[in-house]
Amino acid sequence: MPPEKKENQKTKLHPRNKHRERYDFKQLIESCSELTPFVKVNKYGDKSINFFDPAAVKMLNKTLLKHFYKIENWDIPQGYLCPPIPGRADYIHHIADLLAIKNNGKVPIGNQIKCLDIGVGASCIYPIIGTQEYGWSFVGTEIDPNSIESANKIIESNTLLKGKVEIRLQPNPKDIFKGIIQKNEYFDLSICNPPFHASLEDAQSGTLRKLRNLKHKKIEKPTLNFGGQNNELWYDGGEKGFAQNMIRQSKECAKSCYWFSTIISKQSNLNSIYKMLKKVDATEVKTIPMGQGNKISRIVSWTFHV
Image (cartoon, rainbow, N blue to C red; front, top):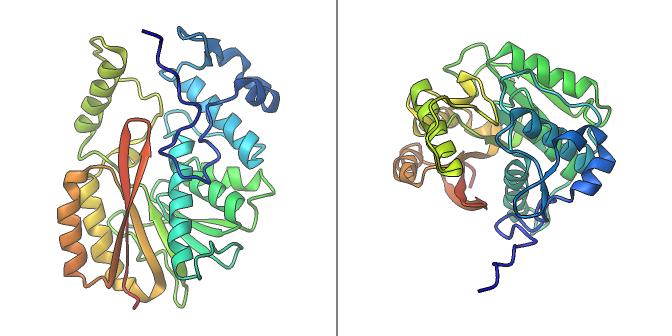
């Protein structure tokens, strides 16, 4: 039996996603020579990196941002979340389609579109993609001062981001919108990739389980190849608890944002989230499926506008 033909495209990704094609490491190295020592020929005879090596993953991200989004200077502190860029880009493209529904089917472009990124992270990844793909302006929120410092450093060291992205400290970790949205301020949409796990122990066991499945062997100590601090990985009540709080609090600022949205990774969380949306009288709810590799998730979005 002949070997299975490898897909040249990641067909689950959004049609406008720049990362649908398999990585062309020759081109990527031409854009960023620092990637060179991390690229090896794998057992299938293809050039690749070791995705279990945090340094390699970080360098790949740096290269992708430079090659596809013209970001010349990007770095994050050691141990902070290094997000998979194709999946983050998918969120931006799908949410752009959501905005198009109320814009005669055309994706709105330009800095008059204002996006609120809840938990922007040290990587500033969503504002980077959103500004470069659609020219939107962003306000990113964070409870972690180190993440704010990192995100601001990325903005200040890249002229393409200056004046388009603002980072704000959330002084109360229990608040999501309060203390961030200013009087008479209006956003077209808010986005969020909430902490997935319910506790640090849950996060570590989940990482071990994933690595065992991928490496097909027993692993005792978790190595977070994509990194992550406590507030990035876990929240009391997990993804469901965070999303429910966000929905509850969104009602209080219903007139300040048209579309609220969040990623929901666990399908089992959807019923409770839909119940909460009904409880707060959301006028419209949309669920947008997303897929990357074997991972399936979705964007749940809601509005209080008619």
